[in-house]
Length: 245
Length: 55
Image (tube, rainbow over all chains, first blue to last red):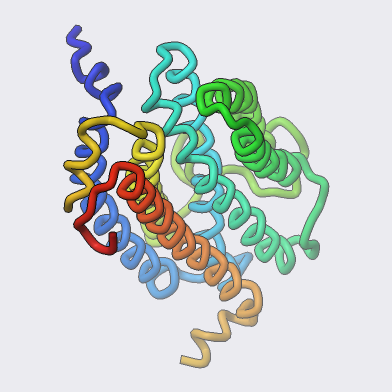
């Protein structure tokens, strides 16, 4: 197997240039698919027979919840690569994930609360799904706090990476919480075995939204990664060149 | 139109959920851009390079 691509991804100037080139693609594709998803979510999808028009919250709740888990998994994987191969770029990726993940975890909790209030008659329950998602928010905040409290960048990278990797056990707990325990939260509609529990006109906007948010994360990550690289490669000789444009 | 805005009586839950989500999206765009601009400005000052938008 040819490992050159992997070594290249360890090279800050290569990654910086690649990130710069790819950002507009991810950004525009994400924006367009978000508009298409919104159109489908608000105007095309039929009302649910049980939840009525209120079910349309799922089109923002499921994507934000998906982001909270996907961003954390990315962060933990990057942190693990950084720990194992001592790769600076991987640590920069992990550090770039945390604020994005924290903000979308907050959005998932807030939209979930707005979904729960009319459907379950409560804004909050100490339910397995809700509690484990709240722990995810604390993991993100703990990760950011830990990074911020250590001055030496390499020690900050390593310590926060250990926290990120250990915390990844929470991800399957969140996902399976509705299956393992009796939860108020409904069971998965898309990510389950067999056919999704939704007709196509309801499902398509949801899938488009999930794609749009995933592309959005990619665009954000590429921009944040460039900032992280600039801050880390303080004296590298390639930097003046990229600052000209 | 007012029927659409009413969301079958769920307006007070649906619209805030959408507003929060897209506020978080917009904030993330703003934060990421500001982070990169600040990193570029700091690198310019550090390395004494001019050029580009703002110096």
